[in-house]
Image (cartoon, rainbow, N blue to C red; front, side, top):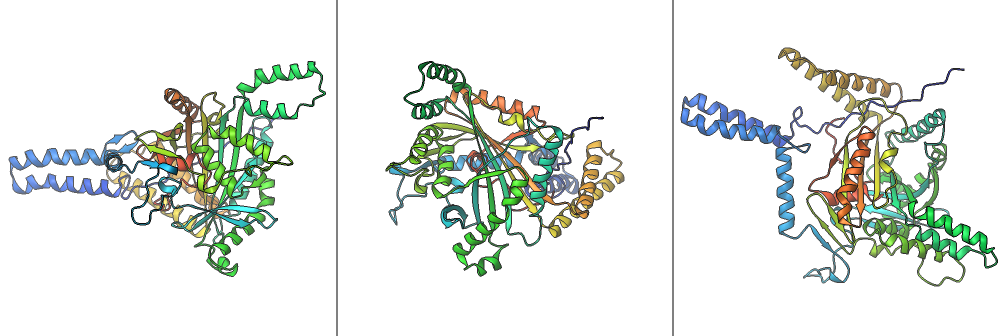
Length: 509
């Protein structure tokens, strides 16, 4: 019997953020000014004017077309200026707790969460099963997000048919939300790979060894734990579901309106997706309560708190425990202190560098393509967030039609100017047409991004950890870009399961 070839995947396209071709709005303005400056000496017929205008025009063109670490020169300069202003005004430093400065007018301390997260609120709502659900509310974006801790059997130890079936089930799950009336605006998957020194395992074992256990068995168990414990790693996987109030206005009104109605609609959506999640082999361990949501945020900012919280949570489930409940108070979710530097984010006792996936594999890849990114590391923790935004049929049709038209017009312009067409351009147009054909056949279209973060507690190991994650990304066929000048925002997207990371406005596909 012939063995089937494993399924492969490809065809990703990067979003085009150019205002005119590959140029941004400021870049187009720079080129326009540079062109006008070149015409000045021609109109005046003056060599002295040419000596002034030509160098200035060249500098403007260099700013618009030059590249600095993947960014245009003008974008790099804007980021640098903005960062230096933040440093000069101390807006890159966040202080909380007893040392936080108080408002001179109200006497209140600032929010516990820094940067772009300061506007978030952690609400509490009934989950419909007798428990309490933590809902992360963004009043600016008008979104409500619930977070679930999930388990997944993985891809490494199953055959190719099962791998293809699981990928297909996940694609079918996403496709159910590619409808015009779906209130779910984003779905994100967040995974952390944490180094584990075995202390938590040893603590749990010490509490559960029977007093009458044979000494030989206890000695053998101790030796096994001493050898395997320090080399172990812990993984945490979260699924975040975000509801957009603008999409569910009528449903929210029918459920009572306001935050209460929005939470009720969100809970209804969560119950409806359980069967689809099971079909995709995702098992929901729990939908996090407010204290659980706060704990996921706190342990990202302060990795040293992971062990203490795990030990306390284990004790909280034992009979007779009269201490604090499991999780963290929502008022203490954020860091005690944080500082945003140009390429590094320092928070409490840790340092984090965040990356965005700028280029997905250009060739066909298998379902296990992302496994190298979350390899266990002894002295570093890694986090990755995959953020999906399902598009409705009308918007998907409009975006794909615009992309196809743009590429066709670019081909005609190149033909008129006598320039050769590269194979990359031919392939991009072919992929755009194939995606439009798949959409017309009933397939869904989603926006997707991936952001990664590597965190260490020893700054001397940071560059080594960064080199390792970039090498693993290259092994996966991915091109990473360090999030220069916005490491705090990158941390919020990559290290926290809050469904952030995609821009609200979309210029292309």
